[in-house]
Length: 343
Image (cartoon, rainbow, N blue to C red; front, side, top):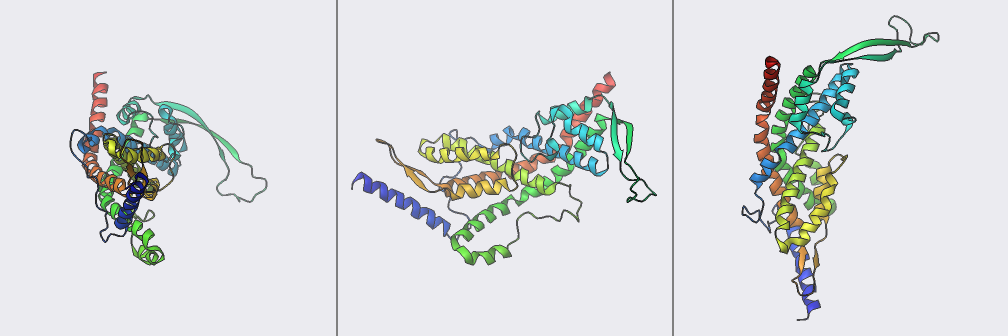
């Protein structure tokens, strides 16, 4: 058999395997390269230990953003503006991404607790006068000036309170990741089946849904979950990538995944995680060969299976780690109180 004919045959087999996986009656395709807990591949347990900081950084970022929002809602814009600019975090209040916190989360809280009270003058404009007609053409806005004092230690208490609430919600939300995995393969099957799948898709409920207007949830719970899932997907993809890089036969898969990872940098659109997974699964199954080397294949479905498996295991580990949030906050606060007592 000639080399070109052998290459075409191998390429056809790769495509047939991908199609067979898509039409499989099972919701999840067969794992072609299961995660291995060996020295060649980074263990997931090590990944969980390494990424505690990333998880807690995002938690405090969202807690700060929640505190800014509730301050504005309480007509305390000066406090919201002060917190937004604290420690060089200008613009954090409206940022939707994974790199909003520019320092380690514990360092941020310690700095906030230790910061001295500040007084500043607030200039505002009173546009309406109680008891007078708002349509009075002779009524002019009245300038107001007053002194406002912020107590950073009290703001830190509010940030930690918001962090505890978000951590509690995330522990529940991380349990939904298994449903998210099933939804990924169901959507994939919908694409294969075409128009007939529209009715089935409409009848399925999403894995995560909330009634933000009639609940006791934190005000940004939907956005919090969206960013949590984005971080979870990025960290799981990084773990899978390290394993692929250690296996020379999977170099093509590693290059494909490495090319997609920058999607999680900077400001993110909503559903960035879903978009990343969909883009990965839509990558073509291809073959590349070099003279004197065996052909190398990219198998997006296999890499997607690895990613979702790693994401599910990491979600379980993170749910356990978030149980330690109250104790972590208490330790930082106790350290601060000890310093005050010793001063």
